[in-house]
Image 1 (cartoon, rainbow, N blue to C red):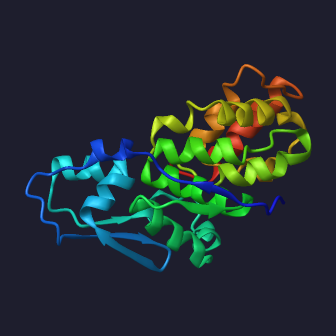
Image 2: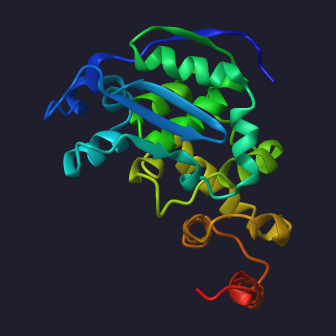
Length: 220
């Protein structure tokens, strides 16, 4: 993995998210992720997270957001929060400071950007450290998609070229992938793969069997 560092800073674009209704500069907002309670001024919370800003539009008194609720696989929560550097970087960019990141940190920041719905942060991570969408990186792409339940995530996740490339890669190699790996993905992600124009199957019966497996142990 590339461990070289690159510098990143958010633009002032996030200022348009700040809700000034009944605003008190001493108000504290809490981002809960894993076992971490990340406290910051509500101004900074609105700035960094369009998801928080949208909540404040409907209810200015809301003072916390449980990001754990937006991670599909609970075992993945510790994986991205065990690094204290992620929490520190989150605080820094929320205040408008620049940070230095490597490829490993960009992966965690990319996940965080989806949880807080910050499109600028997400696209910048993809620009600085693009996700490899080669056949050799197929397993990594599958693991990456396990983080997301897109019923709860912003549509921008689907609207980036890098993510479309991931779906294209998995769909075109669908017939070679162990079904146990695919079954770990959220159903909304599976739908996007199965409806991808590049989908290649062993045969139609195999697709029917796979769909039956998806719903075998659920009430959906």
